Image (cartoon, rainbow, N blue to C red; front, side, top):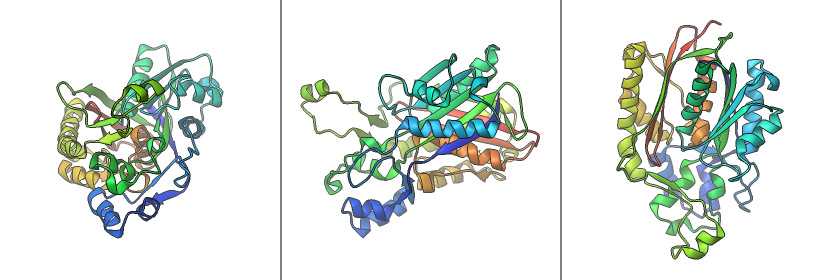
Length: 344
């Protein structure tokens, strides 16, 4: 599989920590806590913080990113054989967001798949595309990933009373979508996928993140009807993600036959600015340049890998080697990929 192009779409202007603090009435100490312990400076949100109104849908963002990726690859809608979307936050249960996006892009008469997953859904979507290409019946696939997590925010919430598992979500996440055009054939500026895998490792493990989907009947039947829609066990994630990242890296090195000194670019997990820096230091790849976007975009869920790929494709030279790692913490999935820069 060759990645011909990658593109991204972000909603609205960046929202920095000071803006969040003002909106929710938090003091300077809270803002300092975000800077030091989370380490993410800004994020883009698909809603108006004052009114709580959603301003941009996942379909809006994914269609924008998909159109940019197709244009960058020089591929028309009629040349796309399949569309795959990874997301944890589809706009609706039905119709599937992937089909809405395909319609907006003028893509029809093709296979479409929508995968429900946390961050690793981006790599899972790439994996599905790879299997389609290997089967020999598909030549070009548009792969999408994205999330609009801000619509699960309660903008009227008193954050001074919020539990840590809820509070952390207001600063960790951003909204975005990304896309990649992949093909069985290389093209100028493309990168070849040398290894790629995803693996569920959640047997017996408690979820590290929970995103509820409430319906009216759920609300009436649930005695704990005030529970938040999104919670994050940040302590568990801090404990498990760095170790899992090392495991993914070692597996990728074994699969490719590379050593740690052969890696020129590393695309680490993007939970938060602080966590990403700790993980990159722990990997200790002596020659690798880090490709990160979390400082200014936040944790964009399934969009993150595509935001990183967009930068990596612009930076990778022919013959250079890159590894990417994505960890899904809701029920714990390890995912990774290895790339080699193609001819310019």
